[in-house]
Figure 1 (tube, rainbow, N blue to C red):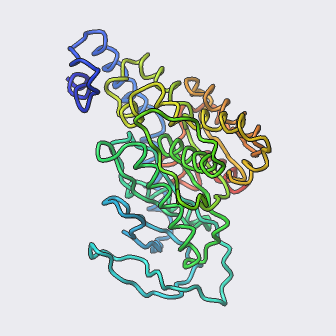
Figure 2 (cartoon, rainbow, N blue to C red):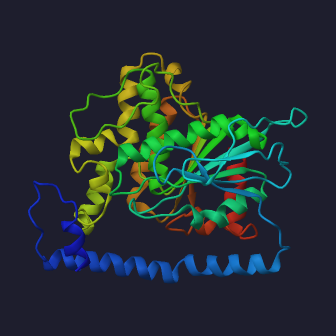
Figure 3 (cartoon, rainbow, N blue to C red):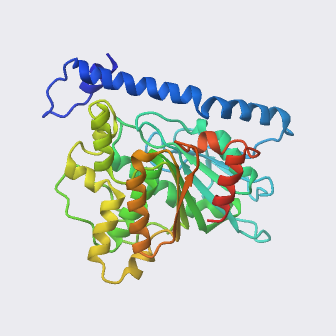
Length: 377
């Protein structure tokens, strides 16, 4: 019934009503049962138990967090910002936005006696494209906060209220907001990193690569129903440059991922094809690998492209995640072709890496390893 119901929701006009195909129902059921089994036998439950024990056995500290700050015009454009304990509030002036919620005063100014050098990490945690809430990122945000990072956790527009264009626009707005306001929290605007997981990895990579291509006017021709917005389309100034990307378990070629969904019988159930335009040519417009490959062919001086892309990219994924390894390897190769130092970390004896589970217990060996790699970015 799940397969039958979801396949009818917002289906394209070219798609006939999907019957209860026994083969497809079997594939979807097998996939769901496999996911359930992996969650029950994998790192999910141990990580939650370890996190609970860590919180109970550790000294209780009040979390320094500013919640529900508006960063853009859409209803879900709210973020929480976690600041290290050493960051003192210089100016606690607040105002209310048009929804009556606390917002950061745009007139707040940094204390001139405090050096602004803290690194900011914006977390775009993966969702199923149609669900997700920033509150679930609190443990990983607190873990990074304890390491001295300023952590920004936004909510993004979800399907069906928005598709890839609206989601990328939200990421753009969040980057711009952070660059504009991070100095109010003793952060360094030139030290902004994007951390993505799953869908968040794709959105992070797509946003910065699309912006670089648009700035150089080398976007591929587009006759699809997908129109990713260009930041400041009038002046073509581009987004503020981010220092680096820290990406977990991402897929950077949508055509490759669609083939995987088709193999599993999920292409008419999963939200991703509809978010990405539900056409092969639209999938290309949403693929960071395609955009970057096209830019490398069109830009004669690759230093121009390099100057707009992040200064470093780190790609984390499980050693046993064989399904998407070719997509990750191809993305790394293209980044290096553009002159961007890129590191691909395969975590041994692990299938799937998720910051929400693997970065929440600072004493856990895998968490220690990941935090060390992040610090070296």
